[in-house]
Length: 446
Image 1 (cartoon, rainbow, N blue to C red):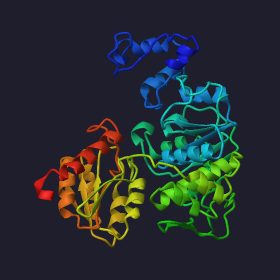
Image 2: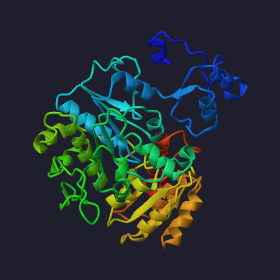
Image 3: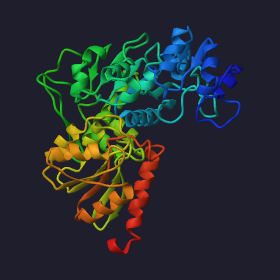
């Protein structure tokens, strides 16, 4: 609405079923009829492009567009990096923006993360992009379907089934997610060479891709975290671009304070994007190490919230899919682990999580949470893991605290969205912190 106001455009109708404002229409009480009378409808990303309402509007000749698509047509692709992927988007965008700013660029960071780039509110810059040298934009699979052009450089961090309720099928999800690549304006796709599914779908990662870390013959490359440094495997590269700088030396990523090999990959992808955009210093590990100083990892992403009686409590509430939860579990290899998992049921297959947990050598307990906790419990028990169903985070934290030995970890990494019990992943993470803090007030845990 602020953008329309800045252009002097009064919308013919505003439809929002959750708004209490009397001037805002609801779908069932004339809203859809009002939209059908418009030439252009700007759709919220959360409304599925496959919904009957959107299909009916398009069949009636109404152009259904998204704010990000309109903005990109206005500003142009040349100074824009678009970052997508099932998981890792926000960290990659945050790292790229931090590095760019420290390397002297006027850089906007936003999109699906934080502020939208077309917002004319103070601090957002002009719609034409004159205030910034570079735009680093997180793009969700929802938003990608609304674009007609691609950013000059597109990064794809990972690919795993997700958001099937919106996309209607896993095939649609993959196609929609990767549709960010290869449209007019695209110059190169930077992709995670350690992701097997991306390698299998490399035909959609055009132009390019440049694999970071580089893919090698006979399989994917491996990124091994050693705490203060990271080793990236090398070998004969496959047919697509495999430029190794700055990944040839990833020691600089230690200054970011990120945990896990997956986040090392995210950092290398971020630096590669800046290098492809011509940012001075982006190919120099020493310059990157200096630029990495002062970075603050995003909250609710492998965030240690307490050390209590020798047990580390870690909030990874943003892990809303099996893929990042597996990556989070790997961070604590060799340590006893109580994993809190479960949430809004989107039909995700949890058997890969059960298989991964079954291979852990250290003691492992899964505490499952509503709504899909029973499906999670069954999936991990079938693979031989111990699991206990819990009514909520408070009960799960209590049981985990009673089980975890000194040196162990209690990890909230739900592999599910938060909807139903919580408004978002932040509220869920805060509930976990509150439950952990309550342990200190409970005589049974003193």
